[in-house]
Image (tube, rainbow, N blue to C red; front, side, top):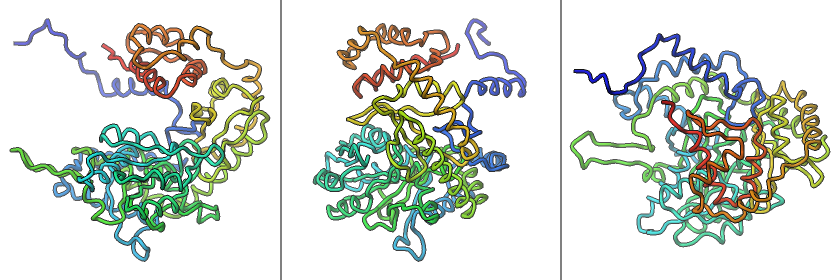
Length: 493
């Protein structure tokens, strides 16, 4: 007998009604196409590619990657994607790395967690394993270290070159070190670390070296073919034992698909997890997830097959030109300077001493339809604005320069954000442990984040929020963001 007094789900609705609700919710999102969003999404502006990827995803959405013997189609597509990534990154027949193997993961974070896990598990005799990373390494390494209980030794990057000193990286290697990591390129600033020197130091110490090429590594080899001075970073470099590259970035596949490559099968072996000591099926997983939808993998396969080498070379050409145009636009505006000369697919800039408040500038750009990514100051590095540049940006480059100049003028006229003295003092004195729910809600309300049912809406302008976070030390930033995001993530009953 049904208990009518118990609350249940709402009654079902027609399919078109449900789809219309999705469309209405999506209307509030940042635009994923059109070349005005400089973070989070990767748009090649190739006609028909979305439809192709969606059709391929639909064909394999219900295929389960848990058992390749049941679904050999998925295994074939994974092997093809691993082979493609290997060829792009200097491996395969006729190279110095002919035996490269790999796995398809859900994204760069999973690839990096698995790279750390594999290195750790290769040395069970080391009871307190450690990894060495530059301070510019992706935060996913810190996540991996946290999840896997691996200590992380962080080497600062130069304030001038934004790269780590290879000698300092070498000096940080200890007997307990299981992995040394570097970036090609780094996410924040788009520069390539000195991989050859770092890999050589790791090899001399008998330690694995992982190159995080998740962000722009797919494009770097094509930029080199176009004559750009891309430093050595892939499997052609002796001592590089593993590389990760995201296909949902500059391979332009839908999210989320990444590839983790190892120089040979023996290096990959500790990546697997197998378990037979229970009455169910024997579990064998190459990646973190067990059940995996074939949809993203099939979509990536169709995308890579359709674009092909000639397509990626053309997209790299268009993107390179867009990067050059955006960098010129920054150089042309008084009050701004590039953090580094672009060498990949990133334009990163900051303000000069007499320039605008960058967080106000970001809001002004948003008001003009440009969605950029503010980066907070860190260890002597100033706050900056990050632009991830994709092929779709190219037709918009001519519009960006005038809007940037206009936004800078408006930001200068508005002046910098000034935190109330009591709030600035509070942030300076607070420790993460001192944050109470009442204090967090008060801070959020003061920043324009209400506590309404269904989540706390963000303020239209984020300069005050970013200024508060920028004034806080990293540990407090982390806790504040955890609490603020917690306010946003509330059930809609």
